[in-house]
Length: 155
Image 1 (cartoon, one colour):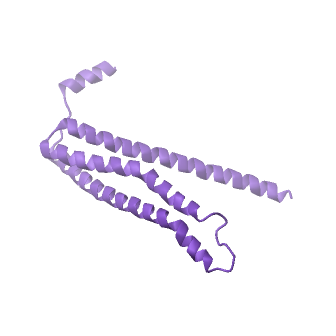
Image 2: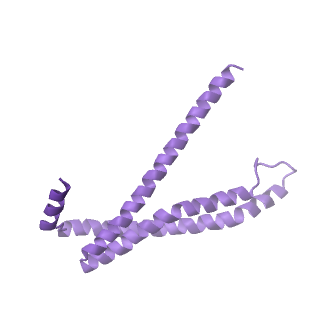
Image 3: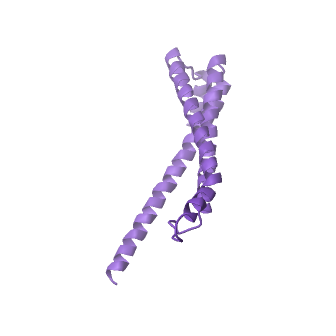
């Protein structure tokens, strides 16, 4: 079955008409815009991460010994830097998709289109795995909350 598909694919290579190329070009331009915004967010997160600990320490010095945070304020900075690191990979993949895709459309190069779409696949695969992890985390929180509520009702 797979050999028949490969034979058919060799005999009938994929071709994009002008409308499909136009859609792909618009997609590449928007993804480039979103990737640049993503890089800006990464920079902002890194700046916040670098200064969050000292900012909260200064803010807490003015308070009368009562800490509004139940943990060390430097942890907030670390969290922001970890968030920046987490979004770096998909933003890079999105940017590569747009950059290589625009070059592929300009030169009508099918190898570059393949490479561009590979980056888009990696972007969505990462996003899908991340969403699955977040949903699993939410489910775990609901189960623990439910069990805590049940245990609390017996006390």
